[in-house]
Image (cartoon, rainbow, N blue to C red; front, side):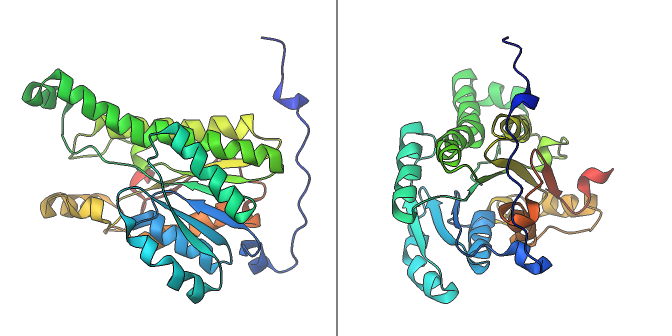
Length: 282
């Protein structure tokens, strides 16, 4: 160690703040980029940022449906929206995609690293006995690659541009599963990656404090295609454990992302916002 201290860093410049509180949330003139935007949470977040005035780059991997929607969405919201295909577990592909977005739009002000996969195999030991060590190892590696490694790849790629610009907001989608252990399903690999995402965001918020803000959002049980694949009885049990008594509509998450994307959160970094219906409150 060289005796380096965080307090030796130059402070960020104080932003020019609007007079009207609602203007804090405007994203006019900004460029937002959202991974996992072909459906679910990512799709709704991308639309919300466009509604707030941002030009938006929507990322997808295997579902190209948004490529047919971006033209109409651009006209509807009066902004520029483009779709980008990328295999997020390929770090070189991620860098190329980020660089292309910067080339197309001129900059990236907001990066929402939202993508992820679930673990549907249950108990690690029981699953290993059922499918064998090698298969279980590959499935573990896939969850880690998608949920953690690729978030790191996106962060590193956009961080270079944030540093060059001198500003930026990186928002990672974590999960309440990074705070607690869900029941009744057993999903240790998923929980572990989401806990790591929360801490990655906190760590980068310190590393990048001179030029960017880094935060995370931890959704609870959300009514998406991912959760709808689970048995009805399990979903009923989830609702019974949530103080608000139900799963959330994905649109109920967008306020957290809009806040962290906008100047309303100009003094917020290293924070995780739980949007979980109170699940983690007890």
